[in-house]
Image (cartoon, rainbow, N blue to C red; front, side, top):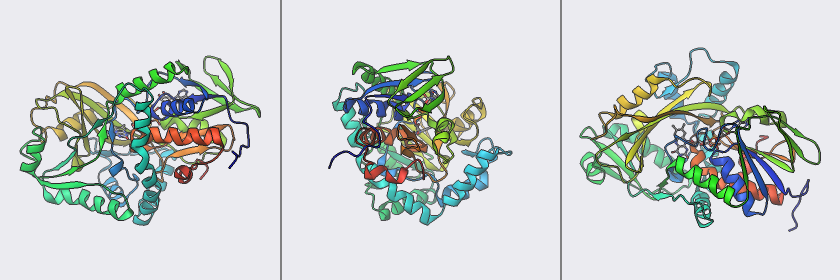
Length: 420
Ligand SMILES: Cc1cc2nc3c(=O)[nH]c(=O)nc-3n(C[C@H](O)[C@H](O)[C@H](O)COP(=O)(O)OP(=O)(O)OC[C@H]3O[C@@H](n4cnc5c(N)ncnc54)[C@H](O)[C@@H]3O)c2cc1C
């Protein structure tokens, strides 16, 4: 079938945002012969794509709004040590987000959203494999063990139920149910407090900072330009092209544009008809030395703490703070994560933390990302992946590059239409 374009296929595309989503989109556009310029107001991985947990876990990639999150959120959001936090005085945008999030936290909305995720999850690794085969010099690691660990069997039942829902929705995920002693045998870094666990199979992980820089290097090596310190303040569709204006007064014209600005997506996308609120769901992380570095991610779901081996250290991450992306790092949250992890890990030096970090997950009220054409045929949105922008970033880039160059919207991204 001939390509159907409302505009000619672009030759030079600007991508705003050098996180996982922007860099992957730029890379896959290059695969299709497009010249790319990536602009970021700070630099590579300046947003959420640096200090995250680096899990590539399509087996458990599910919509964030779900009945249990809502129940939990309403119960415990106001305490500084709670893993989910909402400021007592929310602004209008946050209230809109929370109302939408609550509306989508029903079993039937979850099932519908899950159906949108499944085709993406099936192909998520394929996009990583294409990046690796194409020369990105940072590998994905197979998670030799991926343990979700609990104090009690009762706590474990929450994830077992969720795995049941995932399975009923049609997504395969293999797992074993372990006792505390069995879990410690697989993963000696777990403490004696652990009394029950689940081992997930077939998942992977990366060192996100390394990976982003390797991806950026590959974009450059293939002839792309990467402009850092470029704060894009205005974008105009001029009919035959798109004008991109930065705060420093640079003013360049491109054939098309991709907005991959993470939690800040709404700022530039709104004027092109994207009405979905993108709200910062802030998370924190740090890394510590540990006697036995785990062979894969360790997850403490009851505490909402995610651990990932990064070389000879362990990254410990957690928290979901629905507040401004610009708010300063709140030290109480770092301490709360360390205290939650302390009794559960063996041999981890949780007082000698390095790389303390806060970053903002780009969350949407319906839990679905925004991927595709906006109200302008030359302006595309790519973001809003919430908890899963690392797992789904490369496939997002691959499918969006297909849409931009062919004019066809791939079926997988239809539910993520930015104009919904
Ligand atoms: C604690 C934590 C743990 C997580 N763990 C995982 C995980 O294990 N697995 C997973 O899949 N996901 C995880 N996530 C989610 C994941 O990190 C995000 O979904 C993903 O990084 C979003 O990528 P992005 O490219 O859309 O945005 P970002 O990485 O935030 O990139 C956006 C970029 O746009 C730039 N920018 C913004 N506005 C402008 C402008 N006007 N002009 C120029 N540049 C601009 C910013 O500087 C930034 O570099 C986690 C998140 C957190 C916080």
